Image (cartoon, rainbow, N blue to C red; front, side, top):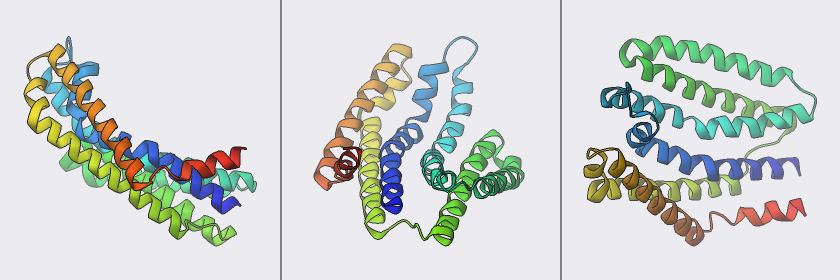
Length: 213
């Protein structure tokens, strides 16, 4: 039962974080421009900050998955293992910063944070399997692949929309840029929902509802 709930928790986390990561990665510059691109925050600053947002976004699934897995340790009154995972994240973060920052500057710091989060999640997942035989089962991996597929379709739809329409609007000014951003977001979310419905990537939601009942 614990394994089933953890696997459903991972699927629930990924179904939100994967498309969010896709949006933040593929639309990093328009999003930064829409939020901060005014006053003293010039287009040059927007262009510099956008890749850092994309680097942070790569870690979104790991951040959420880490929260799901760590609850299993806390439920078993084990705070030592999550603490060790946190220390691993800190150490790997510093190592990745030292590795990436000289050539990637502030983007390297963001990427280091992302990679250290993935290291933390992998460590906790492996330890969970060793301590209590709770693992990510084959059906969950299959469902995760479905989610990756529909997220990839969403990513492709954003790229196509940018090339065919939005790219020229992003450079026209604040109003046109923000309008184009909203249109591309709307189109990509609709495509994601349609692809998810066709592929059955949302079917696990029924199991979550049955557990709640």
